[in-house]
Length: 186
Ligand code: GTP
Ligand code: MG
Image (spheres, protein in one colour):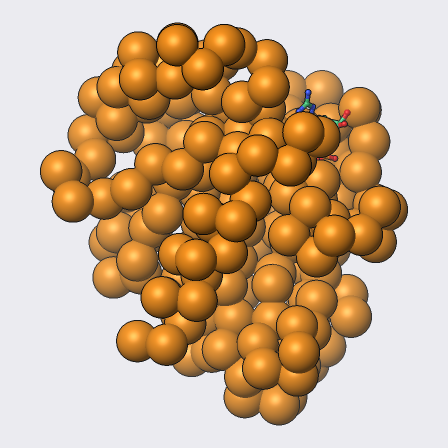
């Protein structure tokens, strides 16, 4: 189900978990990996693929929400404003939303936009699990170093989790599912 305005959101009242992050960070790919589907959520090597809020009903129990990405420089300002509005309306006023997962690329220090998103998630009192994507691009021995760079830039609290995942190699997906089950059963 796709939405750009409130009247198009699902009305089932089921809990929702949203995936947020920069364009091209791998939100749609992760949606597919979690669902074990190939191109259910449409992905692209060109940033700005997802332009609507996409709701995926899981087991008739909850929704995964694949959001449009932010921070992509080549998108026209008018288009950016439009996505910003779509996202802000959803994120700031949605009772069903119970957790927001923030995706960042494991290879790079989070951007100021990422930090803003993180602060915003906390400000509105959502649980924030940080997911470090594209983990296949670095060796396992480098995970800790990269994760502490992410932790530092976002100024994460000690008890908050970073989960490294690779949607292409399907690593970290099970741990992420366990976290989802925990969050969801709260
Ligand atoms: P927008 O819809 O533009 O916001 O992007 P998105 O965050 O949904 O990114 P998407 O899932 O479309 O992936 C962007 C690119 O990254 C694609 O070329 C994917 O194949 C690639 N990608 C995604 N996840 C991984 C991963 O785990 N490993 C590697 N190596 N590439 C990945
Ligand atoms: Mg996408």
